[in-house]
Amino acid sequence: DRRVYKGFSAVYGQQLAETGQIIGCASPATEASEAEKSLKINSKEFMEIVSENFVNWIPKLSSVGFQAVWAGYYVEPKMIVDTENGLFIGLRGQGFMLGQYLAKLYVDKLMGKEVPEYFEQLSLKGDGLLEKAFK
Image (cartoon, rainbow, N blue to C red; front, side, top):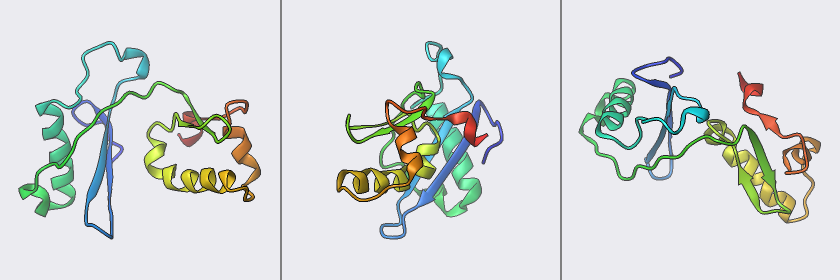
């Protein structure tokens, strides 16, 4: 859901086939440069907004509670996936969508397997991939 809704710019999730777990994310409609301000994270209001969105998608979730909740800030404007330096950071919202694939490439690189040429751009020395490439 990419609409701006009650202070959030995106709420999304996926269900794991093996366990039935639903892992979700809610992105405040706030830029990292405004992180010093009071943001809606891990608050009762935050949980209610996220719950409302997920129950709208899957009504049976109305009787299910949260197992775990965590929060973080998007502060790195580009993806850095660098096996030489042990880094896998800056994925921002795309980490949820691209994380599994990039993790596979990361392991392939560590194992000495061939990886796509663009993977080098994601290293600390590379140009990286800015979030705006996805917008």
